[in-house]
Every structure is written in C-alpha cells, then in structure tokens.
Amino acid sequence: MRLPKITRRNARQALSDDLAAMPGGLAARLKGCTTAYLRRRKALKQLVNDHQFWAETDHEPAPWMDSPVWFFKDCEFDISAVEDFDDEEIALTIREAFDRERKAMERLRTKFSGMANESRQREPIPEKVRIFVWQRDGGSCVSCGSNENLEFDHIIPFSKGGSATERNIQLLCRSCNASKGNTI
Image (cartoon, rainbow, N blue to C red):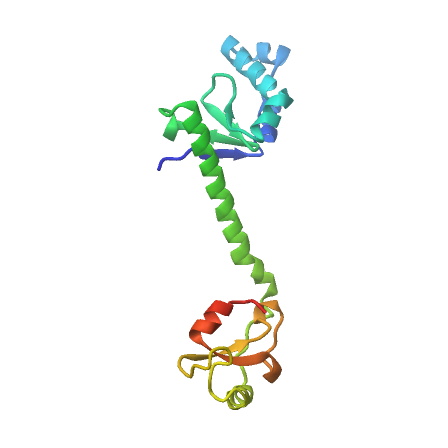
C-alpha cells in the first residue's frame, strides 16, 4: 500500500522558521523578489498564524488551501504517492502513515527502555535451588500433575521483581507455564 510520508515534524515551528528566514517588505523589494515570491511569503505567514487550522489538523488531516501539502498532528505530509486519491482516501492514508510511525516509535521505546536497567539481568536458577524445588514438588507440575516438559517457574515473575529462591520457584509443565505467562 502506498502511503504519504512525513516530511516535517513540528511543522508549524519549522514553517515559522522558514518564514523568519525569508526577506519581506522593503528587504524583499531591494533583493528584487518576484510577485510570486511575495505571494508565497504572504500565504506562509497566513498559514503559520492560522490558529483554527492548526487546531483542526490536530483531529483531522487537511490540506492548506489548494496546496498539495497536507498537515496532521503538527506534521507535514508529502502526498505525492497518493495524489491520485480523493481527499477522504488521502486523509485515511495520512492517518495510517502517522499510526504506523507512532507504533514503530513505541516498539523502539519498548525495545530500548530496558537498556538503562541492564544491571537486572536474569541469573540462572542455582543448582541447589533447582534440586530442592524438584524434590519438594515431586518431579511433577504443581498445577496439573504432569511429569513431561517440566520447567522451573518464578511464582512472582522475574520481570516483576521475583527472585530465584526456593520460596519463589515451582515446577510447571510447559503448557501450564505458558498459560501463566508473567502473572502472579
């Protein structure tokens, strides 16, 4: 599926910076700027100062006047990949592109959020604890009684602060352990 691309984030501030860099008034005339340039500068100034437009684009993708540039959630979108779509389809594809990027960022945050917490790496369960738990639980799953595909399970999951002590380890078969997940 073809999707629009985000060309700028913080679009309103970026456009404001562009406007500030453009000569206007007497400076523009002295530099010999064309009428088309002055019209473009005026339209850009209008866009930057249109508070209602920016409030509306927080909820719904929209183009600025008749331009090929669309805005949504303070992002500017290049719609060249979907310019043959009607406005409703363009708005939907912009939402999809925005949502895909949001999900990708969430995945990255989740993936790298634990890097600061690398000191809490899972240590193997000590052998004396494994032997004790095996004998205590009789070599069978404490949930269903099976003695096949047994695994050592943290009663309080390691991810929630559980330790690898005899009181916190139990024997579960693979299916019971999988259904328990990281719940207590």
